[in-house]
Amino acid sequence: MTGTFTSPDSSEQAESGQTTHFGFQTVAEELKQKKVAGVFSSVANKYDIMNDMMSFGLHRLWKAFTIQLAGVREGDHVLDVAGGTADLALAFARQVGARGQVWLTDINHAMLLRGRDRLIDKGFFLPVAQCNAEKLPFPESSFDCATVAFGLRNMTHKEIALAEMRRVLRPGGRLLVLEFSRVWKPLSPFYDLYSFRLLPWMGEKVAGDADSYRYLAESIRMHPGQEELKTMMESVGLARVDYFNLSAGIVAVHRGYKI
Image (cartoon, rainbow, N blue to C red; front, side):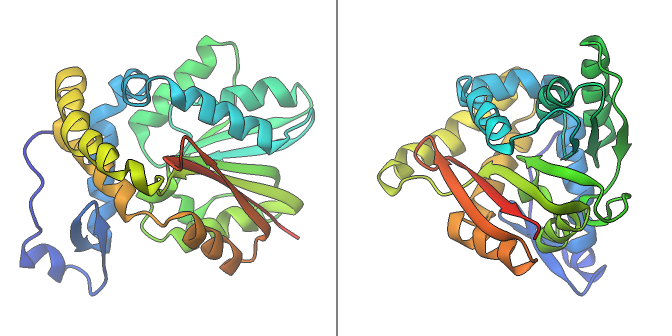
């Protein structure tokens, strides 16, 4: 993916009566999915390396906390939505054992292939599905736990995706959302400097793609904050929703239950 993101022209907006955010841009809804696909197809090969560099390795601790909070046990059925390169799916596969099952899903083909190959390399032959989180191809009440890590902010209709994840949970099942959130306010100037200056520079030097990492920084700012996401999860019928701030609110883990 090369070039610089620019504001969509009138012909783009004319394709749909509905618009949404793609970073700081306003685009027709049907265009967001295509643009997000372009971002992740571009960065798939360097995704894991960039995660380590961008977070200084902290993403591993954030994911470990999410995995611990999920409380997955032997025999559970787990759905990892927008699972990408399979960090969570791999951990859950080790926890559920032979009697359980873990599905790895992602809308992006390049990311899903990398996740599938990584699982195979580790000796796990899990079912995978390329699918849209807003239209999950699973029956109601199929899973004990569902997770989405750093994927919700890229979805066009977040409420629909959350409702779908709730739908496929069994009663008593839990949904965990690990996502960038609102950083502690005194840190905002430093975080902004890092996000809008250093992050695109790293993207260019390591992945050959500054624009995709500029979108990443913008998408974080457009994503709902801690309380707003909690309310959104409650609005789709999830109960006992709570959240945990990590690294001064750079990320947060939200957890809700299907009652």
